[in-house]
Length: 305
Image (cartoon, rainbow, N blue to C red):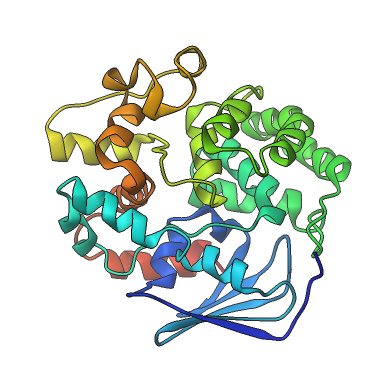
């Protein structure tokens, strides 16, 4: 695909809090915060373009801009079905906690980077560590045309003395192959293929599917989701291990273990709203239900520039 250029805008249905939504999405590992409503693409496809939130619309100026990219990075790709999933489950009131919060995703050209971030985030803080590592590994190796210099990226990863990054370096060649294979696959098969990659567990697979715009019928099941569900339902439910996922069909809506598994229960109850629930849970866990705007501003200034 050609990079294109110029300025492209789309209309936004409802409200979009770009800062809050970027904070809660792995899309922010590719962008840098400039000031409210303005983000710069620092890594990957279309590197150098600027995303700008304006009243009722989102605009992109520079290389790689398109309506497809804007639909993903605005959350328009899933917002109606996400809201419907929460409302039909009887939890539409959760939308009022964080007005304008959406599930932002990256385009297919950046899918490997999002998958790499998902693997890293399985064991460590996204805000504190993963964004920095992604910048070091892919800042110069993920070219503006969407191509990744895989061998060079792997060599850089091997120089970072951290167990999580070392595991990513080992998984990167296979992960790159599978990321290409899942393009066009139905979500159930895409999840199975991701789970077959070494070091990719249910959380990393679901994060990849969610933040690359493949499906919202996933619940990565991190500690933030466990906390929110404990507060909502009054009991703690744990996610299943990778071996259970693969033996139970690898797709939560059809899995025989779904009644005894955090991800399975969430998808069963919330359906296409599961991805947005996970996003709400992340913000709830990181910023809390009160005074979150001040905490968000501080985090953006400290970690996202």
